[in-house]
Structure formats: structure tokens, C-alpha cells
Length: 527
Image (cartoon, rainbow, N blue to C red; front, side, top):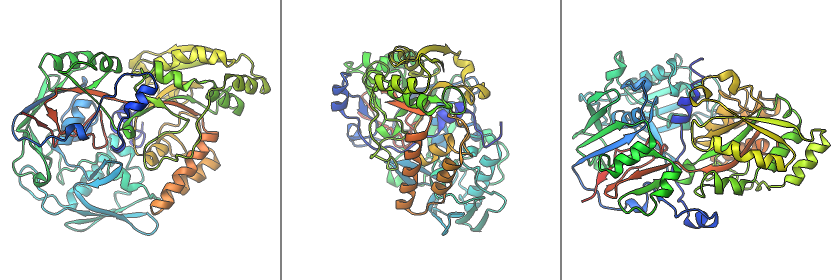
């Protein structure tokens, strides 16, 4: 696999969208679901920060855990640690780009060249000043290695990019990209120029790694000279990050007092702990929810026939999926990714559940009783459950549906199967919608689950990337969304929230684009 085709597993873990809208208790009540969890990083955290103390947080780890900045997105615990050690060029917060190491990022008239102005006064943990040369070296290194970020930097021409002065660099692209600023706000970690030992690369972040043992824990100590301390954290003296593979064990450890924060717990656990005053269940802003979909490959039978695609979309009982699969915590989706993002086209109509219409479409196409096999796995919650629920729903609409359950360890490793399977479940993790559309649709897509592109879609994608200015960019994204809504192979039927748990004393944890790998920079422990 090339650097521009990042691993599906890394993709799902690492790329996210901005934070923003609140979880509505009214929505959950309307779906017959449980009471709404606390929204991470909002009014529930409006407690005055308190300095000092040590936070112990548990996240999923892996056998390949590493302190290398080039493998920082390999597991949740690695990712959370990386966000404390290394600053990024920028991040997404509240649906907007917030620049960190960068002071500003601006494009030329045709978005083929982007100028990045570096913030003054940032230092690495050894005291040396961070400059534009460090940023360019970091981008070149991330782009030329098999990192998650390389997939986002595929359009960068590293050799043609240059330093204008110690605080300014010019990034040359191979083709126009009006959304390259969003890519620069996706975990572009900055480390010193000429770094060769990436497992011990210095950072300019709010914490330094004091000790680390793979599979055990890592201890980070706060910097007293952090460049942004006047505007917030670090408030804690220390943070200990503990890798715990099992979600149930993470929650049990929190309940037993071993941890203060447990990332990535299940919806069933969230429901069970809803009335436990010793545990605060937290969830993501809706912009960071994941999209559940049945992906139909339009280059395979029967989905080369448009009637079969439309029939599947009509066959899905979306309200039932929300009740049974998301346990009432989620919301209906209508065959489009990215709801609640500023890029989303809210004029897209809701998709009705109409099994009779599905039957008529199949009959008209000579596909009565057509057999479908849904490739799925229990790698992540919601996919296997969705496939199982669709068996009965599809039958009511005239399909004969079987479930092909693949072992979790094998599901994403067989890339050929992923890109050629006629029908499979997908859980699309949140990321800025223009980037997400580029990853999964069009000729340059890294993972075109719905099959090869065509000239119409390619033209829309090219126009989207060439768009300059907010109004034109939004209009271009809407054009792509409308095409995919009408002609695309993804039946996006429900949105599902990621959930975590914390002790009531924990405050200041912020998603800043990635709920499952939150930013602990401003975390603190209340008295």
C-alpha cells in the first residue's frame, strides 16, 4: 500500500471533524432512548480550573504501541499521548479551524500555493525556538512515510515547498485544493528539523514524557514554560495514560477508582451506568458522531442496476435502526455523511422507509427475490448489529438477505475484498466533510467502497477542490452531496455517538476534533 493509501484501521482511528452542537435530550426521548449523556467540554465543565494533581486515564492500546511521532495514531492511547507531547499546526474546534503552531494559513488566488505564518515565541521542551524550518521538515517527513497524515498530504509537493523566512513557509501543491487548510488542521504534529530518532522526538506541547513502558503505562509531566499557558492549561502536574484493551475493563477500573477517565466505552455500558452518580457518562458533539451505512459497490451485481440501489435505501427502517442498534442514543441519517457540520446541505430530504416501493423497483428491474450477502464484522459496535437488523427489513422489501460475518482481525486487512464486495456495512468516523468526501468518493479516493468513479462525479470533485472562498466551497460540497444522495451507493441510515466515562471530579477534557482521542491539555481535577 502506498503512503497515500493509509490503512483503514488508522483512518478510522485518526481523522475527525470539529466539535459543536449539543446532544438533545428531546431527541433521545423521542426515540424512546435513555437520558442524554453529558456533552464533553460544554456547560457541564463550567467549573473554575484548579491547578495541580494527577489524572489517570485509560484508553485502548495495542501490541504495536509506540512513542514514535510517525506512529502516533496507531492506537488511542498513543494518539492521546501525542496530542500532549507535540503541538499541531492547527486543530478543529467548534466546527472551525483554530491555528496552534500556525498564526495564519492563506492560499493564493487558485489554491495551488498556501502560505503558513508561524506563531512567535513557541519553544520545544529543550528550549530551542520553533521555526518554519521545523514545520516544513515535519510535513515532509509525515508525507514521505507510511503515516496517517500522508494520506492528507498527497497533494503537497514537498520539494517545491520552501522557507521564506524563519516564521513563514510556502507550501506548493500539485493541483488546486481549496480545502488544504482543513488538511493542515488534522494532526500535523511538529518536531525539530533534522530529527532522526522519531521515538524520542522533541515536542513543543504542554507535557513531556517522563517514563513509558509498552503495554503498561506512560507518565507525562507538565511544562512550566508552555507557550500557551497564559490562555489555559496545563493545569495538572502529571497525567498517567494506561492502555487497556477491553472497554468493559476500562469502565470497571474507573468504577473501582483506578482511573479518572475511561475512553471508548460501549453504548450498553452507558445505558447501564446512566443512574450511577459516581460515573459521569460523556459523549461527543453531534458533529463528531459516526455514520452507519450499507455500502453498495455500483460496479457489481445487482447494484449496477440503479433500481436495486434505490430499493435498498427504501428498505431500511431507519427509525428502527436508531432504536435497536444505537439503543436510542443515535439519530436517523438520510444517505449523506456529515450532518451537523457547517458543510452539510440541510436541504437534502429525509429518506422514507417504504418497503412496498422497494418491491416495485425490484420487480420493474426483474430482480424479485434477489439474494444479498452483507459482509460485516464486530470490529466496532453497530456494524454487525446493523447487518443483522437488515435481514428482516430486506426480506419485507423483497430481498433475500444473508450475513457474512468476517473475523474482526481480518475485516480491514483484506483490502481487495473491501473494494470489491457488492454489499458491506461501514462505520464512517467523523472528519471534516470535504476531506471525508475526498477519501471515499471520486478518482482519487483512497477507499472507494461504492466502486470506481465516473466522469460526472470526478468533475464535481475537481470543482470542489478548486473552489475558493467560503460561499463557493460550501456550494461545491453541496453539489457533491446532492449527486451522492441521488446516484451514490452509500445508504447512510443512522448516526451513532461515541461515549466515554469520567469521575465527576474530572473537567476540561475537550474533543478538539477527536472525541475518542481527546485533548487533555486543559484537563483538571475539581476539589
